[in-house]
Image (tube, rainbow over all chains, first blue to last red; front, top):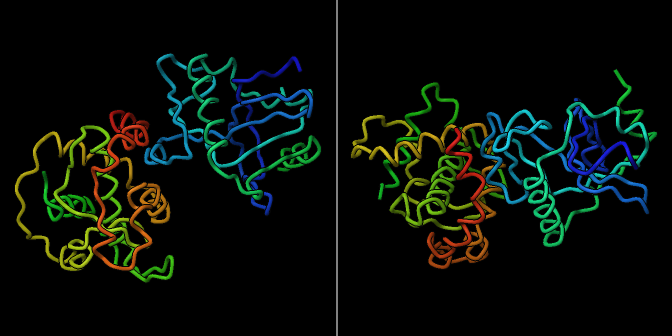
Length: 145
Length: 164
């Protein structure tokens, strides 16, 4: 799985929940794990805090600052949502969803993944929020006008 | 420490166009209430907790009660309409440090929906401990009981407020 790596950010539309809600626009997703056995990529949704700084107060959100050091994969201070699980089928075309270059800096990435895993160990993620999309589903959602 | 009335008045005075604190009746968790009243009470509760996380001290001299839709200052809840209609309530000047904190808090939270504010209030472990009681005396919350936990829980928002 050579062309994407943990810590990179992919931009696309995803299903938010299995019950149907899908994103109307592209969102950034941080790659938190690449599972070669299951052939999946686990990602976590990022959202800008601009104008919604209060979101940093939720237990289910982890704040990722865009500076110190300056990040190349996010433009603004953001939160990583942890109260869901997003997985997509690994395929070589995932690379085309990279909109930014590089990876999240080492320390912030390690901290983010550690918080994400801890939250998932300590909290139940309901099935509706455990979303998986195959290559076909993801492609179909992201080719619509 | 500031009085609950003065902090409430501070937030109400920010709402120049009367769009933030309304008399819209809404229903959540089986209770009907003014949306603006709940918003004001959640602001007080969350400002208190985040200030404790930041300084280790209470911002507001008030006891909160664990009601179904989050923590409430009963004095503010009972007098919401009075406070809304009476702009001439006199309050002592809020010291600069607390005023700066309230200013940043308001900027950060004014775009939160009422459901998000209720959810944040419900995330307070002291609210969780006190919310399933019937008698008011048992619903009384101790804002300082979990101050160590608040320091960790609100670490991100404390940092964000410095950036607002």
